[in-house]
Image (cartoon, rainbow, N blue to C red; front, side):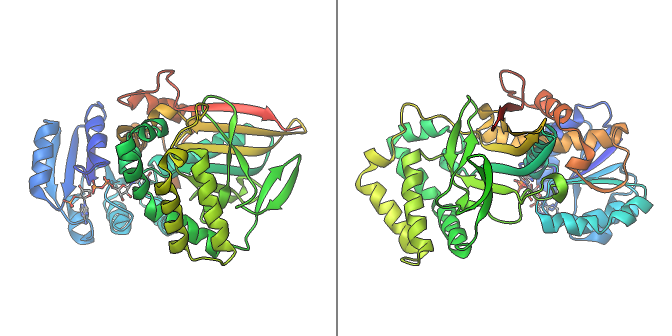
Length: 408
Ligand SMILES: NC(=O)c1ccc[n+]([C@@H]2O[C@H](COP(=O)([O-])OP(=O)(O)OC[C@H]3O[C@@H](n4cnc5c(N)ncnc54)[C@H](OP(=O)(O)O)[C@@H]3O)[C@@H](O)[C@H]2O)c1
């Protein structure tokens, strides 16, 4: 069968194309993009099954004629070109997959469900690490309880210098410490801005045996640690929309998403102090951020040292809080911490995309229309399929770790 891969020589597309040609289901893969030179170079690298095609995905007319005869069109370019590409797929009667993200994006793509069904095609949207893997973790977590009151999710924000390092590794390297810290500047400013804009907001959280509305800056959640136990996390960086496409009825209370950095705890406390000054109206986010950096630079040993008992976070975790057998309970799951490295970050998007394409080609996914990962895949078997295609799978062969606890 024939795959037309837009963005096939990009960071997400290339590993996916290499995996796809290994499948007996794939007889040809067209690597398509605006640069014929890059497409040809990559086709030569990939081998006999690959051909190069030059096209601008925004040009729906040209694209529609080029994709005739292909079985599936893969968009590993961007959200921006998704509509013309899906239109071309519908006209050509070819299936479609992408690595998009965002609630608005999903809603816009789902408007084409009836047309996709009429054309007899399956379009699986958003099959990257997030929202695909993260949402399947959410579904899996909710499945472990009889009733889920709330889903909480955490996502690490990691920048170039720290991307290939665990928090312990980058904080051991004194030259890199401050440089990496400065790479977080835009993110931290954004967090302060979120805190300022949502200063009167409360979040619903389960605390001391009951549900209460709490201030996200002063009231904490317990986030799971991969090696067991929990760590204190504050949902002050949380914002809407949450969980992208996750069905709204999966939990009865609004979910909480916590964005965090791989900082040691004293640095989080220092940052929270500044966030409190911003929400109190004492300073603006830029001034608060300058004070944050100055304080650290005046005493880096105090602020940039990891305590001996510092436990590594997972880059992504999901917690379901609710009840099971009539008792309050919490279920946690997290991405294997070994996957916190630069290579895995790309593979965890390329691999789900490949699995989605192969499930369509093999006929395993038969539902027609525009569907999301939660609708198309069963979480645990999907995670096993991801691990099987990772170049460096976690040592225990599990994509996620998990824990369950009674809350009363
Ligand atoms: N959902 C997730 O979890 C997740 C995770 C990571 C990435 N992503 C998404 O994946 C997408 C690709 O990321 P990437 O890092 O692979 O980007 P990249 O390395 O820049 O690759 C983009 C590819 O698309 C091609 N392209 C760009 N504009 C095009 C156009 N108008 N027509 C045809 N081809 C075009 C580029 O080639 P030319 O420039 O030569 O045309 C290139 O091959 C991004 O939208 C990103 O948001 C999603």
